Image 1 (tube, helix red, strand yellow):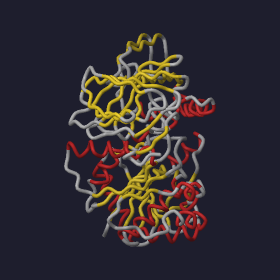
Image 2 (cartoon, rainbow, N blue to C red):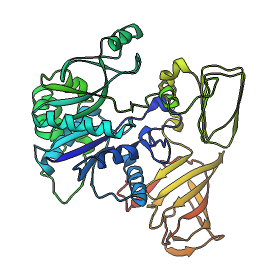
Image 3 (spheres, rainbow, N blue to C red):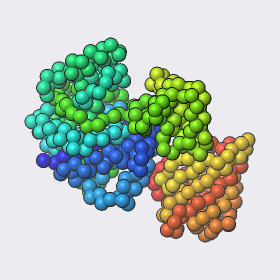
Image 4 (cartoon, rainbow, N blue to C red):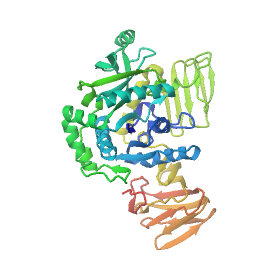
Length: 472
C-alpha cells in the first residue's frame, strides 16, 4: 500500500487575528518551538510507510512553508519527498482535494491512499492518531470515503457533528445551537474533524458522480500528464479562479453513499478561536491564563487569557472573562463569549484597506524578512534581513528613493550601472527611478537599515525586472 498524506493549508484564520494575518496565517503560528504546519508535517512523516507528502498551499505563502520545513530538517532527519501544489487563489477544500487526487493518481496510481490533513489542527495523542489512520486505510482500500470523528469532551457549538452507526455515517449535522449540541453529545454523536482518507481513484470517481462541475474545472488546471521528476505544480490563475468555491463536505461528503467514519480520541483541537488557543495554557487559581512569553500583572481579575508578543507589561484590574492579545502593531481585547466575532475586525480592516488584516510589522519574503521600525509623512524606516544566498529582485521604484546602511554581514549591490560590495557601517543611496538589487554573498545574515523617502511609500510601488523566485 502507498500512503500519501496531503496537507491542506488554506484559510486566513481570521478568528485568531491579530496573530494570524492573511500573509502569515494560522498554520504558521508557533505553539512552542514548532508551528502548526510543522507539527502537521511531522505527524504525517512519522506515520508508517510514508515516503511522500503533498502540501497544498497558496503561492504567496509557499516560501514561508519551505522555511518552516527547512527548519525541521536542521534538528532531525527527514527523508520523505516533499511535493507542493501552489494555488493562486483560495477556492475552498473541494477543489484543493480534487486537484490533489488527480496529482496523486498521476504520480503514484489511483490505488494510492490519500490521507487529507488540515495544516492548522493540533493532535496530541500520537499512538491514537496512528491507530485511527490504520483503521481508515483499511476502509479506504475497501473503496470507502472515510472521515474522522472525534469523541466529544463537551457540547460545542463551533463544530459540525456526525451521526454514525458503527463505521457507517448516517448524517452530517451543521454547527448546532447549545441545546442541540448537548443532545448530540448525550446521543454519542461525533465532532466532524475535517480529516479524510480514501484512494485517489475512489475520490475522483465520487467527485465525478456528485460534483462533475468541480472535476471538469480542476482538470483544466492539470490537463497535461505530470512529469514524475517534478514535485511542484503551480496552478494557472485564470483557470483555477473559475473553479467553484465549495467545501468537500457540501460537494461530496453529504451526498455520497459510501462514507465511513472512524471514531477516535486523538487529543484533537482545531484551534479555531482564542478560547480554543487558551486551553493550551494552564490556569491559575483564579482561572487566569498567561502564556510563557507574556509579562502580566493581574489584580482582582479572573478567567482572563493574555498572550503578548511584545516586551510590554500588561496589567488588568477588576477584569473578568477577557481575551487580551498584544502584538507589535495591534491589540485585541475581547469578551470570551464573543471571540468568534474577531473575524468581524478583519472584515472591517479589509473594507477600509488597512494592511493590518494582511501583514505583520515583520513581513516574510523569500529572501528573508523586513520589519517596519517607524514611518511618518514622506518617510519609512525598515530593518531588512537577507538570508545567505538570498537576493532581492532587480527592481525600480517610481515614487521613492532609498538609503541602505549595512549593519552586519555583507551586501552585493547593483545600483544602476554600478556594482559594489559593502560591509558594516557602509551605505549606498538609490534615487527614485534607479534600477537596483541587493544580494547576500556571505554565509551569515545580511542585516541593513533602509530609509525610504518619497511622496508614496506603498509596497506596490515596485517594478520587477528579474527575480530568482519567479515573482512578478
